[in-house]
Length: 503
Ligand code: NAD
Image 1 (tube, rainbow, N blue to C red):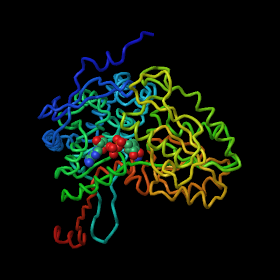
Image 2: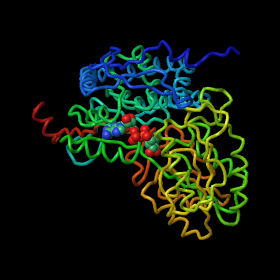
Image 3: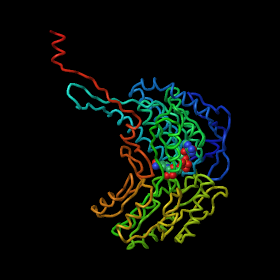
Image 4: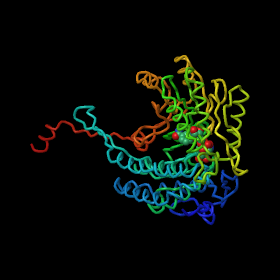
């Protein structure tokens, strides 16, 4: 196997540009922002920072391209998606490496992210082909049917944690339904999305997909544009709330879907296979995919008192096998968190956990043998966590696991449901009746029984309570990119029509 220098091969000498109206551009005011490699903390390149003028240009290009894109019809649009899928496969290694370099996620996990996209390349065309309108027998002498129309231009704003995966899969349901797109990745992790612009350029007609890079102001320009009626957002609860407010302040009614944060509970009953449940706890944290920086991570583990000590000890010893290191080093299990600012944030939670009386069983410090400037944290395990502690109730979005002890079922359910977050949860028991009763009582948009974190295309994914609005990856999402219209035809009395026509 030849060893390459990933930075040399995939970043140095490459130009990262925005993609507006079929043109690669540095933006109107040529402003750029540094890109740091979280594994070393060093600046590795720069990317454009979009101004409001660039966002407006992107929206105008998308609006101009939309009628022809819609008129192309479903089979024409699917042909473009198929072409794009082929290009993504060809660029798997480059995209995965860019995410490792830019985001800090282990490169092999990022190869996995690209592979998962296959389910979306297959799933969206199949769902779109099966879509039907309704004929509704609402009255005599009239024909009522429903038709669907795209909104026009869709704005997509995404989070930092799975950059290429979002930039590949999130556009698909809006595009296949005949909308055109302005997409903005997180300003923390833009490289793979800007690289994907080259593939979008090859696969889609000019103006159908537009990509701008930038932060809050670029996102705000998308959210408040009069030409964007539909926004898909993935990110934190505070930004989600702000987006709803700013959209309303724009004076335009907008359809907004929000995929937001979670503080997901894993509920463990005393009858579980301990080893399986502990493996499930680690897997469900997404530690070796994105350092626990996942909305779906089971960061609150509620373990029954009868097996509590055994569970915590086994979890602690199993965590020892995870090697923290450079994200693009093939032997790394857990990479650095995305930025110094995020490291400071996660570290402040670790300090708060200790100060508030939780037991730090393992981790939480800087691992040895890693580059000095990198943003590394040894996965932290806290026991004796309670709901009044910040680590017990706030989303940390990092490699920190909090284990609660319970012995009263109703009190445990009340604790899980006490938060205003409700993205996902999991239930671990071999008793089916208990499993389904508990799944029914947990306030979450997605509940696993004896599993966690995996979600499959076709099953509606999204949060309850403050964790979101709308459901993705399913027929629900496809319909959410279409406006429904009823067509009412007055047929009248066919007998009088016949006699008027034929005498
Ligand atoms: P974030 O809210 O800081 O940023 C998300 C996106 O919003 C970025 O592209 C950012 O540039 C943009 N943005 C920031 N301010 C904006 C504004 N005023 N107007 C418009 N856009 C703006 O979130 P993050 O740190 O990138 O991601 C972490 C959060 O995302 C966590 O809370 C996590 O749980 C959540 N998340 C949820 C899901 C899900 O599917 N439910 C998936 C991934 C991440």
